[in-house]
Image 1 (cartoon, rainbow, N blue to C red):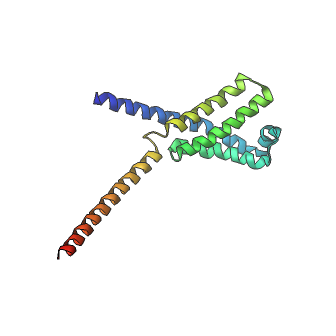
Image 2: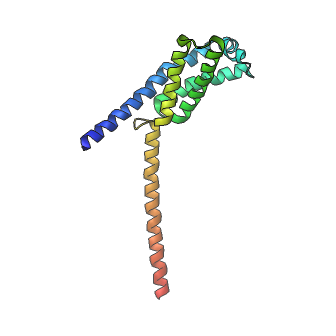
Image 3: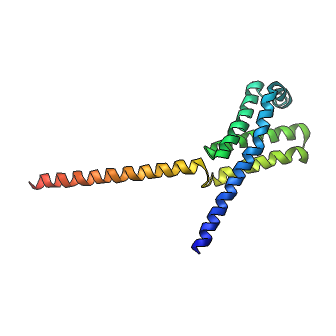
Length: 166
């Protein structure tokens, strides 16, 4: 029983790791493509939506795809990175539907990135991530700090009870 629990946990965490790494590795080049010709991206995708500051928003999109991808790969700030990617994909899906209707060839890749980001938000980074390591380090420091504080309180209580007796 214990063996199956451990194996299930490892497989689950490996699945989450592969989802994070593949999503980040496959999405990152889209951000770099946008940076190569940011004005073209702004003209083709942001201006048709009549959003303000199209070039600035284009840099924001490229940044969320590049930065978010790196953060997913490392597992650092994983949910925040996935939220940024989810927001980017939501607007991209809206753009695709608004300009081309329900064209499956345009929507399928966007929907896969959307679903990946949404899944990562729901399940978290897993044990093979920087987020998990940071959480474990903070737990240990908190546990150590709590034991030191409780020891000092015990000492102070025993000293104050001795002073009351004498």
